[in-house]
Length: 285
Image (cartoon, rainbow, N blue to C red; front, side):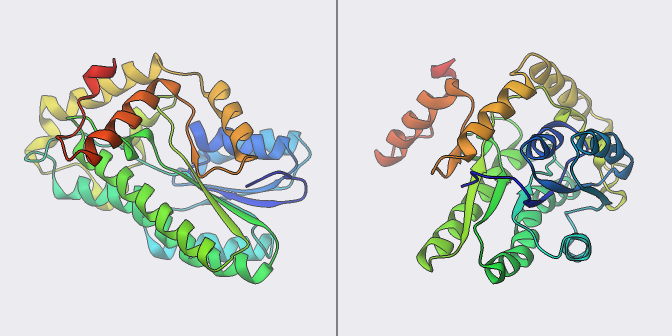
């Protein structure tokens, strides 16, 4: 768990906006130096200016974390500018709609490679470095409440976030068993006022939405409209991230900032233990 950020060297992915930006600036406010990363390189300089204004050291790097070689680039640049990493924040993530019979395979790959594989790629590089350093280190994996519960829509997003949560749990247990100096926490937010609805703006060229009929369908067009409406009427970003920093200093694996999901999460566990059908979220609205 993080209790002192002064002089720490932190790497934050997806830091050009939203949760990533708020976490990066918040760490700088508390004394950390930053390497901020985003697939949209042009989005990073305004964030870097905020960090410089706080008197902290900051570097920027354009990278696509869904590619293993790009995660290697992040690691190499971290070693070049800092020579160490005390805090790693795997925040970059995307969302895509589409039902089980309509979503194109390229969207499945895009969401999984960004939401799950990137965590794997980054941790496999930074964990050996952190262990070799010997000092207390922290990995914060930003997952989602979608990694703990499910809805009837967007199966690729929900299943990818469940995979990300399971990956973090497995790695946490492995590190604890061997008495590692690394702690892992996961942030599973509910709906927050971010631009996740505009994920297609971050879509890499290799996943370009071009030739499948799905990309001209109403299902595809309406998904970001629905998500934007929900997010615009959700929890304020700063207020939520303030809660995150409060919880980062506590000895807890799950960081949950939306109390309204508590009953659903607990009831889901009961339904699973009793081997009943998956819990109906509408019972808790």
